[in-house]
Image: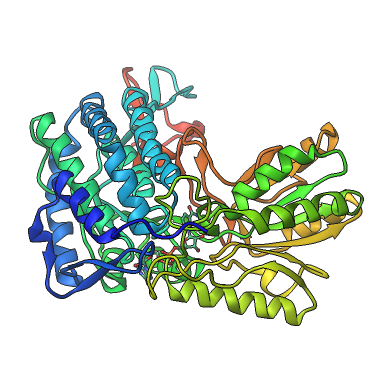
Length: 508
Ligand code: NAD
């Protein structure tokens, strides 16, 4: 157990100053930004409501009229500068993420690295917004598709990736010609203020971008709802719980807006008879306990072949017993705090329910003596379940790993796919048939399916997102950019006649 090193408040305020966040952002009352590391309140921030949100959309709408005319590679230059500013700010911003979201230092830095990576990706993409040229059935005609900027993009983010998720959306939106209006989690407003100050520096170096190209609205549900309801916002990318997605999705559908929904996960790994257990063990430990179980891709269900169960699970229980829990700023800590009391209570409730179903629970419970009264550190729990039921079927945003046994591959896949969420998954096996079947159409039903690595810790090059109750959205790499643009099909007649398609005649 690593005890708290120093005041998180003072450290955070010093970082905010260095990153150029003006004191005027703070108020004597308003939204309280709290550090889960020590439980201290770092600052209060004025909250935006519906009126401020509409004003932000006004500005973004004006910015769109200008920004869409800037050539895409030039827009890429702005994102290149943003990447440079992020490189310069990496240490500070990473530590701020640690202080505000509670993840260990290397994960805080990793999150900023992910922002840098997506900027690099977007810069290259700014010269590759390709459309197809399509064969036409009519003589002296040409058919092609062109991709145009879409409009202001609303981005609603969760507390657990307080900076990276904005960048996955914003870097693509900017090069696609779209302004971004960001509504961060009410639990992590400071990281959002810092990112906005960094982006302002890039804008200055670029030689000025239109006012309103990047808007920040600090607020809670009311601000989010106003953004979702605004008809001038043709796309909303919303990351958070499935409960949030159930509210936001229908509202967007009602006004025919596009949605990128990145919602909860209940991710599993299958450990097959041929698995290399040393690799599986490390992958499982990182995926299940990293970020204190507060990643959307956190490993929550382990489906272990009965022939290796007794070799793997006792070793895993030992790792759970020895893992370093504590102040995430302290070197060597692997598991930091939960975000708040509600998260800890949710964990306790799920463990009690599992016990009532006959589970054997290793670990769990609050770890006292780190941070103040309002800091919630929990020992990660490994839960041997008699079968897949109760809390194992849903996402509890805490470090709980449920384990069940299987005998046949078909049974493992059936267990794997029979939950509501469909985000990430993995299998540990050296059997190529099992590996290929797992990633085939008959295998994992998730948006991410891995072999011999855990389900968490994705790279930005691939499209990120999941199926079913995870919402179906895709962000970051591959062709995810297409969601931020509108496609027009153009047919051009350069002949002297007017042949109609499908041989239709209409002679007037
Ligand atoms: P949350 O659902 O409580 O909040 C997410 C965001 O939605 C916040 O900004 C919140 O203010 C906003 N919001 C809530 N209700 C809203 C409404 N009716 N209209 C508009 N906005 C609204 O989630 P959280 O606790 O911050 O984050 C944890 C959850 O996020 C987990 O379920 C996790 O799996 C999920 N998550 C998913 C991904 C992914 O990419 N799939 C990534 C990170 C987190």
